[in-house]
Length: 384
Image (cartoon, rainbow, N blue to C red; front, top):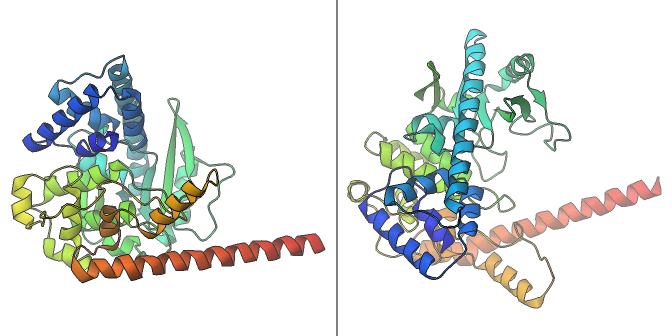
């Protein structure tokens, strides 16, 4: 029920149908005397605490036993943090513009400032900047001159899609910058996405009076889907802030988005967007405008991938082993349809019984190769 509440709140703007559902679920949660601290913890972990607070305020619903005060303090912390980050990125943008370093802001720092009605509603862990590969050294040098320093004991390999994070403490807040030369991890399942791919057509944004840019609407939508819901199976499970980003961007700009261009990038996008309806309902005008297919609800909406290799056995019990095998080979229908982009009929069966098992088999082979290399490396060291 906690995931249902924070799922409904995973959007910037609410509407009548959404608030009716939220009110009903909250009343049920309260009548069953479930732990409110778990709701606040999960909302914070998923990056939607400010959105939860916003929608509770709209309903006039106050969490009991001081949990409302805790939630409000999380929002205040997010507000102060984002103000500091906006000032920091404005300084960096100014320097990059002076030194002719082409760049785009991506993910949280961009979305907070052009999608959400209030930048304070979008928490972020770091600031992501995309620059040309040839400009990496120059872009990093400017950051070093501004007082940013490389994190100690980082695990970023030399040929990675972004440089090791650079950090500077500003007013007590560690501000982390990730300089990307490619938007996505260099995995076979991802397209290569360098600055040149998106720089000719961008979405302008303004931060602290400075004009800068992010990905255009169509690229942003596709990137948010890839980043949030198509990551390799070893990566962390999606967070509900990824739902909020896609829903908020789509609802705000759906009449401006070039849907033909979206289809060229990902022809299954309308079908994928339909699946978010079962987390937080789309507005009627968008449902009819995009002709979303909402006839059949998927099983276990909002449940991400919980199988191996993302999750491993903890206590080694037979029950846990069987559950892990089940979640590995038969993940939730909702996640399967979003991840593979196949929604109905034979395409879905092909995913269930061929494409997903094949993906697991490839991870098994990669795991065996990795263990074999580790074993050989250990034996080599022992011989020395």
